[in-house]
Amino acid sequence: MASGLPAFTVVGLPDKAVSEARERVRSALSAMGLALPPKRITINLAPADLLKEGSHFDLPIALGILAEMDVIGHDDIERFLVLGELGLDGSITKVGGVLPAAMEAGMQECGIICPNANGAEALWAGDLEILAPVSLVALINHFKGTQILPRPIRRDTDEINDFHGDLRDIKGQESAKRALEIAAAGGHNLLMSGPPGSGKSMLAARLPGILPDLDARQALETTVIHSVSGMLPEGGLIRTRPFRQPHHSASMPALVGGGCHFQQLLRLNNNCCDNLYVEFT
Ligand SMILES: Nc1ncnc2c1ncn2[C@@H]1O[C@H](COP(=O)(O)OP(=O)(O)O)[C@@H](O)[C@H]1O
Ligand SMILES: [Mg+2]
Image (cartoon, rainbow, N blue to C red; front, side):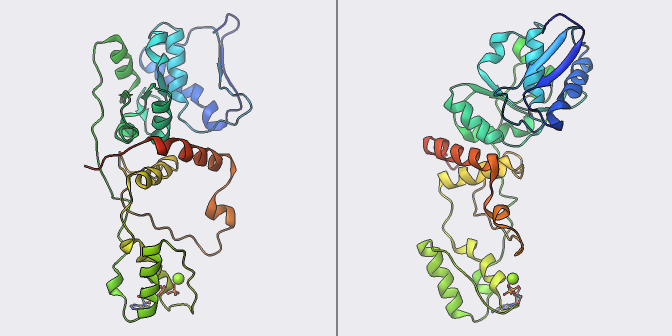
């Protein structure tokens, strides 16, 4: 914050959603009865050469400004990794990627501040401090000590893992079923070839049912991917094998992924999952 004509700018290659954080932050603060100070406010998202996208920068931007306005202490937020989207009324709404962020926080030995709806998800990252407020006011009250936020409660859900049928529903096709079993037991790839309607999709959909359960590391890895893509049901750990049916005309990059996010995810998987241990209850 500097003196000069009042302005509020976000620099560091923000996309449209990040630039619009200004309006959400301004409105969320005024919902609490706080006005932005009449100063030149510059938000710098470092590193400056990396494109930033998503709405999860709202909360860290708001907290930075609140600390600068001395509403909360600088050392209150120093030991936290923060992400969350702000509503115009100061509520903090759900964002994707909380689990991998929490894993990173755990590695850097700091806590995490995330939306209330994502609190249970962050629990899977292990033993770190998690603040999951429903609103900006609740978070400020927590720092002031007037209303301490409870730790989120662990929740389990498998609801996105719809059941794709049982292998015993298939009539005949003994050699195809045997091939499926051998592939499942040995962890081999399968290439199905045959005329339309001969049951290829049907056989493939029943493969997850005979595969062994996910171990802790695989469950975490699967959950991280669902979390980043915003497909994770509230707080859940995915415990059953995912089954995807991409269209046959999908391109190679569409199937295996690509771009900067893919690289980040790979790095995260290699770094984090080894150090983590998930206990099934
Ligand atoms: N051996 C079989 N036993 C039971 N149903 C079968 C069998 N083969 C085919 N079907 C039926 O035919 C439908 C079409 O099969 P599908 O898996 O879509 O074929 P493909 O993917 O090879 O074109 C299946 O959903 C199933 O209802
Ligand atoms: Mg098919």
